Image: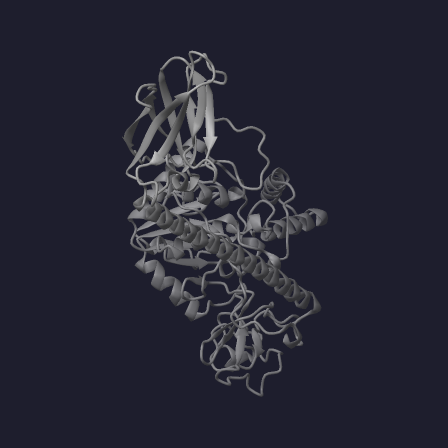
Length: 532
């Protein structure tokens, strides 16, 4: 394990934001152009989820190598080369500092995971090949084999060696206290395949790895054995990959126009040829890789910020993590007895998380449906109002009669005059049915000089009387009922004291009020509201 750590490639590098953005824009262009895009992911995409990587400055294999070198140092068996290696590893580990950690089984999708899943769902990317066991790509909503393949297995997968079905479980499927090259889980509930009676869990041969002939030679359920029941899919050092996963990766990478490597150190050389089966290869990673000079585009950076910028360049929003309920989950009380208490508790946490996510999704759906219903009712009410307005407008009077009458006044030299506004067809379409109020603007010598008359049962003609000695033009504002949404109509009537008064017919001008859209949210306090 530790032997795959390269101290000369342990340092992490980031490029300038300007240069990185230029490269990300190029990648976005290539994704738009590509007819088939594959992502190839390593441990680096999961570090922000709290899962440690392997060969980073504080990775599992790096820390293992540090411990190994310190043992040599303590025994006095360290040469100059080992001293230099230890010095480099310790310097980079100190620079990196402590990282947040969560159990692999509890880890949730990162921004990078969800960006990839979003692109796959939108058909802008097509497949993910991952070397990670953590199952986070499944939690991002990708379906095993159809949209993602786990080259080194998945903590949630239990595969039948007979029919090939992958059971997607809600618990950690690998047995504890089992030989490192034994992957036995149980019998298949679909086809009945089971481990032979000769199985004891103890190897019958020292040859148990990739060079062995599998169960026939060592009586252990290996990675490539057939018809020996179900197995976990973990690939340990010294083992062959399952042909199913190998073939999935090969088929999709061969088809790809573009393969984007994300968070992979490219140290495991038996599988690093896959990304280069594509016509173009891009590597996104903080550390140097053996293939930096071979790829078509090299982006130095953390995967989350790079994928965030990529989605912005593509003008796409990143989907939220979906509710993930494993396809072949079993009730908590039915989890196999071989699963340890630690992983049973993890399964319980997963169930609680899933239930909480489902409740949240149901609440969101309920709110969305309520909002949809509110809008539907609002539209119906608006349509009904418009229909009512249309009907009312159809019966609207074509003209108003505006005039004044005159009668003698008890004051010498004065006359009493009365203004009124009526409909031309007052019998069938009285003005008071359509008009809320009429405002008369008089000569400035009158106090008050503006008088508003509201519609009422006793004053249907909007009558207003005054006493005076001179004639002048009266500006008349007719304010329609609010339900019509019409602008006020303004006209002028010239007072006349001869012949008992005068009147004139004014055609009705129907002009809609402009729609006012408020930016104030309903239910929030208004501190100030400026207009015009």
